Amino acid sequence: MPETPNIRPAIDNLFRHEAGKMVSLLTRIFGAHNLELAEDVVQDTLVKALEYWKIRGIPDNPSAWMLTVARNKVLDVLRRERHHKEFARDTSVLLKSEYSAGATVDHLFRQHPIEDEQLRMMFVCCHPGIPGEGQVALILKTLCGFSVAEIARAFVTNQENITKRLFRAREYFRQHQVPFELPAVEALDDRLARVIEAIYFLFNEGYNATHHIHLIRDDMVEEALRLGNLLLGHEATRRPETFALLSLMCLQASRLYGRIDSDGNLLLLRDQDRSQWNAELIDKGRGFLNQASQGTQTSKYHFEAAIAFEHCIAKTYGDTNWKRILQLYDWLLQLQPNGVVQLNRLIAYAALHGIAAALPAMEKLKDDPALKHYYLLYATLGDWHAQRKDNATAADYLRQASMLAAAPAEKKFLEGRIATLMI
Amino acid sequence: MKDFLLIFRDTVENTQAYANLSPAELQADMEKWNAWMSGLAEQGKLVGGQPLLPDGTVIHGTARKTTDGPYIEGKDLVGGYLLIKAADMNDAVALSKGCPALETPEGTVEVREIMPV
Image (cartoon, each protein chain N blue to C red):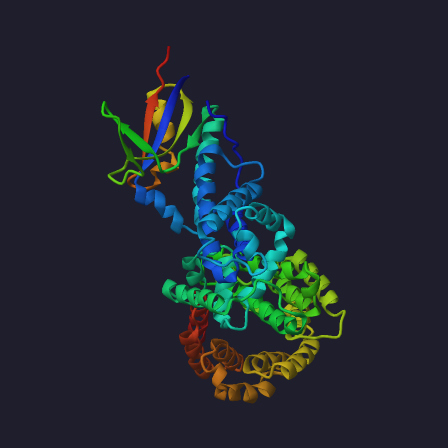
């Protein structure tokens, strides 16, 4: 008679999180050039867990259970493939020997905290040979356990596109025998900057994705925070800019739900109910910002976090310290002289000195090729002309903005504004 | 209370489709089973069961001829079994209708009463 199953609720996102851990660990064993093999073994492991657990219940330590299954599958692969494949460079010889494979695999399963392998995986994903969009897709696939379909939905593109990006990345690893390790000290700064950028991109995709189902949006924000925290857990990557990134993400995430009213409509910063902002995240952001400023390095994340912080601590929109924000934008602009920063700087400038003083410069930004399809430029121009009671010009700009906006919630918001101007 | 055996069957294709599900989708499936099994456990009707591997051998009749599976020819892949307690066959069938094995059109749950003394 079989024993009574263990009935307990599954931990949220258990399968996704374990997939991310195991892909990192198995890539460490098989080598980055065998990434697909690692992913296949992890998928088999997850399927086995489901088939077993659905009838036997979830074991006491599901994570250890999966690791044991993965370990046995790794040994099967080594036995099957040892004459056909090279594995991780430093251990390939040991893994190919019948005598040492078991002990070597056990050693690798125990050697590091898995977080270290995930950190290495992040750096491998952000290899300079992989284009930016490929890096982020790869992080989502390997470290976050997202499927091709889920990544495609997150980036509003088709699955074929994502499959291609992932395929090219895996091919690159295979052809160039990319090692599964943190880059050497002299290359670390550059690679860390790429990793941070990829995490911030992930965060923004989640944060701005008002057109997606909430689940994916929240998952991406959560994953970006989790990966950022992984960077803080390692001495080599615990840098001022890492703290600044974490600060910025916490401060932005604190307003995630304040931006939308109960009917799902977008709200402008000046119309948001500030009591809806998450005080705990603001506090965390403040702490990280303090830690970020202990050092000599300043990054764009420092300034952006400091700006977000000023918004978070202003009791009302009217209390906002625009003088300080304008100063921060001036500094940010020196570091990043681009149109988007100029646009945001002008909004702060207008808040301080009035729209009339900022309008000519804002109109000039239309000539910036980088802002040609940036709906927020036209939305801002529309808003400003509306405040100056020039309703016809305002409506024209808002219509242009609505055409450029990708998200239905944004379009709805802009069309709502156009309608009020017509009355 | 009487004892019943539930036998879960599905096509080979449906069983193999798990290989293409994402971790989140696998977890969602897991949670459906979890909810159904919890319901049985709360009513004191869950006894236990085992999942089965897809491969196997069938031995045929007097000639003892053997054939190996999985058995592509139909819906005949048994994924596992479960023993439950129920008041009668109607109760056992009602309990089984919520089983996630029935989430595919081809999935079946066979309900059999275990012969009492």
